[in-house]
Length: 255
Image (cartoon, rainbow, N blue to C red; front, side, top):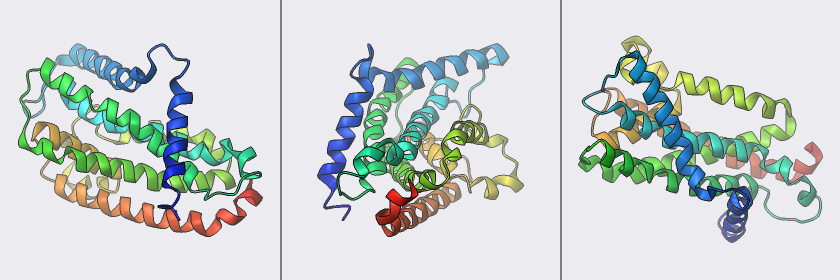
């Protein structure tokens, strides 16, 4: 069913991108400006506190490799969480696989991810940082963050139809998640005894994977985090898809 609806998914994704940027000055450039401006702010704050590098990696590049997937993830999660309620009027008029709505939201946000990835070579050139062979792994981690956003986004789209206060809590939850994830700071600050537990945060494995792909440097615990993140991604994607397809016929009743 999902594969048969791929054209509708891509059509809605393109429509979402067009509507989001058609009346903006920067247009798709916002997908590049948002992580770039955040890198500048965090780097300036770090400089005031005393500039340091991590594993001989400039801080601006270090934080940039984590902000690109994080910015996409938050954007995709927000769009997919509201995707069903946003199209309430259509649900009562046209019959189509409802799972297309959160999937098209993630697919539309993936366009921002592709553009955001262009920030990484810009930072590498600015800091005169030579690429490592591990950059070949970047597409794999980029695919994983898309799949993770899709899996969690499907669950959020379903739950948001039942518990409307979830939409109000989402900005706070993602902000809290930001501070719990080593984005503006290094994962080396995590104490050894807490590292297995920290791996239950799927974005940790993804972000460490991005850093490893770009810089070639990794926390010794990175393989465990990456495998844990991959397992959680698969679990959310399978269970979310199953639950959504199982209940999509009564979705209008929940609304």
